Length: 309
Ligand code: CDV
View 1 (cartoon, rainbow, N blue to C red):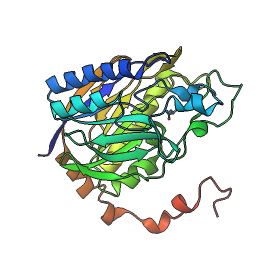
View 2 (tube, protein in one colour):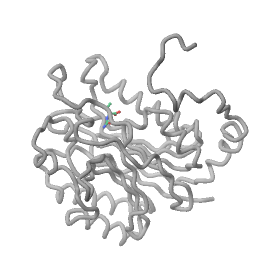
View 3 (cartoon, rainbow, N blue to C red):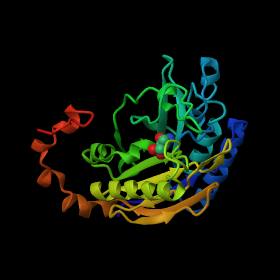
View 4 (cartoon, helix red, strand yellow):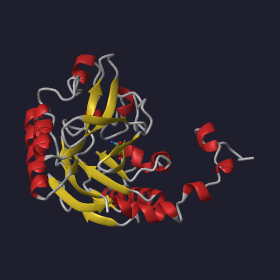
C-alpha cells in the first residue's frame, strides 16, 4: 500500500479587489483543515492567487503584469510554504508566472512536504482568443496573456509514486492524460477555472459544464489507470459564475470524493497509489496492447483533414 491522503482545496471566488494576502489567508485555513484531516498532499486550483483575469481585456502590459508572480515563493505566498512545511504537507497550486526573461505562463507547481518546489507545469492547451471579442458576454483571453507551456507534461517521482500535473482546459484532451500515462503517472493534479456558461453557446450551462468536467476526468483516470484530483475555483467571481464540481477520481474512473458547494471547501480521500497497478498491468497495459503504427497522425497533424485517405 502506498498511501497519499489527498486534500482537494476548492476555492470560492476571488474578486478583482481581493489582495493576494487575503486570498492566501483563506488558503491557510484550508491547509489547517487539511492538517486536521491527516492530509499529506493538498491541491489548490488554477490561478489560485487571483481572480480569473483573462475574462478582462487589458492592453497595458503594466496592468496585465499585476496579476503575475515574478517570484515563487514571493512575499505574499511565503506563508503558504511555511504553513505547509509546518504541517508536513506537500502542496500544489496554480498561478500566473512571469519568468526572469519576461515570459508569461499559466503555471502550476508541486512542492515536497518540506516546502521545496519539486515540479513545475506550464499550461499547454490555452483556450479562448487573443483579441477583444464583442460577441461574448465575457472574454477568455488566455491566448493573449499566456504563452503555451514549454515544459511538456512532466511526471515526477514524489509522495512515493509518479505525480503529474495539468491545468483546466488540458483535462478535456485525451493526449494530456496519455502523455503522462506513458510516463507511468499514478496521480494527476489538476486545477481549473471553468465559467458556468459557454460564452459562445448560451444553451450550454452549468449542468452540461459539470457533466463534461466529470466525464473527462473520469475517463482520463480510467484510461490511464491513474488517480485524478480535480480542483475548482468556483462561485461568482467579478459577477461571472464558475462551476465547482471538485472531485477525486480513482484509477477505475469512479468519483470517491466530491465538493458540494461553490465556496472554499476541502474534500479528502485516502488514496492508495497501488490501486493503479491492476489497470496498468491488464486492460491498459500499454506495452502489450497499444498499436502505435496507427497513431502517427496524432502527432503529425493538428486539425482534421477532409477525406481521411
Ligand atoms: N480556464 C480554462 O481553461 N477554462 C476552460 C473554459 C474556457 C471552457 C475550460 O476548459 O474549462
